[in-house]
Length: 175
Image (cartoon, rainbow, N blue to C red):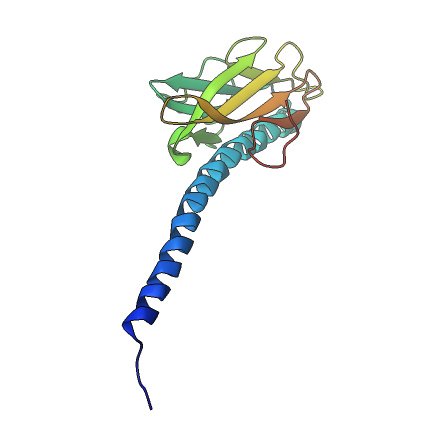
């Protein structure tokens, strides 16, 4: 009775394993990058929803401010429109609601374009973003700095939020 493997069997097994890994690892890396992009958009959506609900429950206007400097970016809920979340504490009553670009490696904040600048405001009466509607765009770029995927979070004048995408970044509708 024969025990062990022949050299040919080992070589064939290693060949099959290398083909499977060669195909699977790049796909996994691309999937992880896409998940970070989706995570940034989803966390932004949640941050905006929180700001709107906090404005309604507290009876005070709430701002969501974005800051971007040398590739570092952040977004935070604040009680004024000039809080710099990269250098300041934007907490309200000791509660900090903020997302940071360091949590989303490779994701670029390409634009935070609102009617009033790089912030949006939800009013305390009805939760509207009247005069503060706009879009936040996050991108993944390749080694030549060309845009591979983009996800946008859009804030309407009524304070409603929606996602859209450029490229294939998930199941979001096209922009």
